Image 1 (spheres, rainbow, N blue to C red):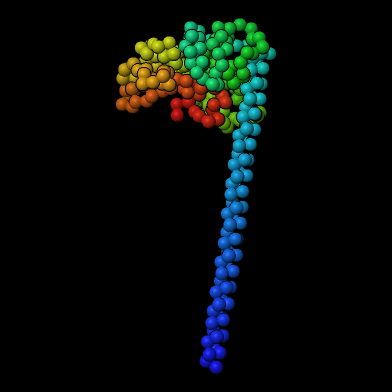
Image 2: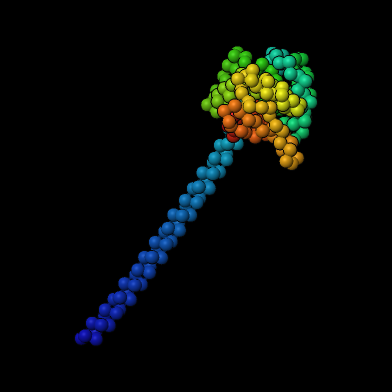
Length: 249
């Protein structure tokens, strides 16, 4: 009897052990399935995000095209500031800037002429006018632009960019860029002071290697120091870049 009970107990233990193994395997398989589902969901979410960003950029391009079309229709070009001699400097940086084509520099000299079929994209045309004309200070035109961005569901994204371009214009940053692109650090410092940007001394061009040809060091009166890549900073005035970066950040 005792032997029989022992055999029964041993068989029961083996049976329980086998049952536990089966349960563990089922649990493992279940967790793997859940993990796979999570990975699939994350992958699908990523694809949706990429698709959404692409769709948003398409809407922005359409909005920019409509803004420029208004200028074409009205033969209207915002009045330029007396910095048209900035073209050589902008041409220099355009050669290195993927998003800026060489035709931008040529566009500066004709910005007050009747607008022919554009030789640059609408994004480029808006960016150049933000840099070289009174567009950031034209309330009627900014209101029209805001209305078009709202029409395309982009007002929330584009309002900070428009505000920051306006603030940069008031601080004389586009004028300072013109001076720096022409190698005039003293002129850049003086024009920034007129815009209430105080520097301890003139900006200094960094010369450590060729890739930093257009990097300048700024030393502010409050003790801050900042290296500014003119190529990257100039790009912040162009609408399509506003979806990724903000002026002054």
